[in-house]
Length: 165
Image 1: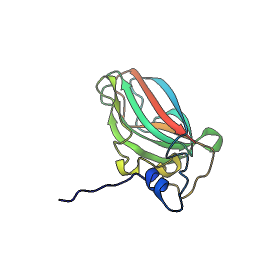
Image 2: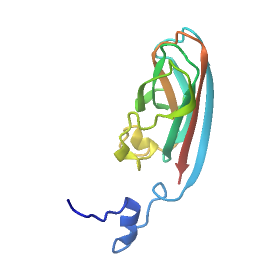
Image 3: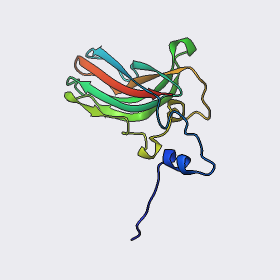
């Protein structure tokens, strides 16, 4: 075993010679929050899309918390879509979560951001989470896409924290 002394990216930049300025997405920035609630109907089918929030492509998502009633048999992927103004197409359908169950009630909130996203990617921005090679600017929609149909009606809610430079 070895004793180690490691630094985060931000502290490595601070201690570099010459010093490297940290990009605002790593340290600092403004923390924002989005909330969304949907009423699902019995029979909402697979591939139904529930658009949660518009996120700047240069933002870092800090957390995605899911709350729901028992929406029997339902599940969904959580990922990113182009905005309505940009054609609404899927960019990455499940970059945050894959087939997350909403079949049982969740009243205290379940953190789902790292269900599919690797924890090693905690410093990645929205455009990077989407798998894009460069920041296109603008916004992407965070959305849940059903992978299992709703066999009961119920409420589905999200609390999303993110930071912008």
